[in-house]
Image (cartoon, rainbow, N blue to C red):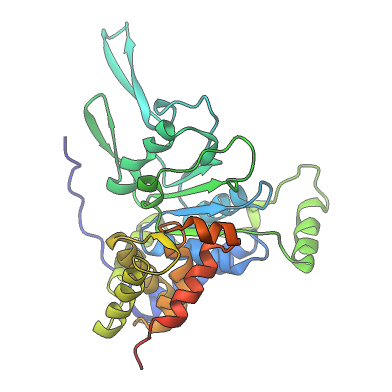
Length: 330
């Protein structure tokens, strides 16, 4: 069964689009203290209508970020803790027989929300991880042969522990490719950590942030309007060519065993449009493409064994590649 057609949503454009993005950033920033580049990259994924994979050790505020973002957008949110025994139906939902009405009833899973936090997604095996594929790509879920559309806007923010930690499973390439960005989150600076500790501990017994400080700045309908407006941001043909040349260079770069496919080129352009919106512009520059290239491509390439032996990282290989790909002159 195909998803029912929805009435068109008018786009938000120009200065209004940039102002709304700035208001979201300011509201969420009151709870998610420090690491503004992480917040900006999550907002880029939201504006571009994509999904984000956050990698970092536990306890760095990833759950807080989702909760604060949901409150600022007046959206529903849900959290799924991935474990080795988690089943795909625990995420998508399942059909159960109701003897009172003598038929099967569909019970929808936690994926039916606006902001889904898939926490420690690489703690579960590939079969369970793949339960999110249809939701992320087609914004629908099929249960017992029937397709159910997800509420819009829909953003999946998955967190994963570094693969070196015990009890983790690497995500399949098909799953990784569905994420628009892979964002690395590290420890906050000393001053930011002081602010965080003061905000959480002063006058409170629970070890959590008081989200009452996060104002609801826009509605979920306005989020969809922002996403459509972002997709209309102007990309010059030379800038588009630059993005495609970067992705194509990963396929023949020495030391990269597996380069980014066409979805990598698309991700670069989509994310660059959102980057321009956060900068208050209605056009994309080559710097927008270059600035977002690492989070847009780092999960789409695989290094050759010799670079692993040398201890080189994916980001180092991408920086070397970006230095060699000529940018168009403005």
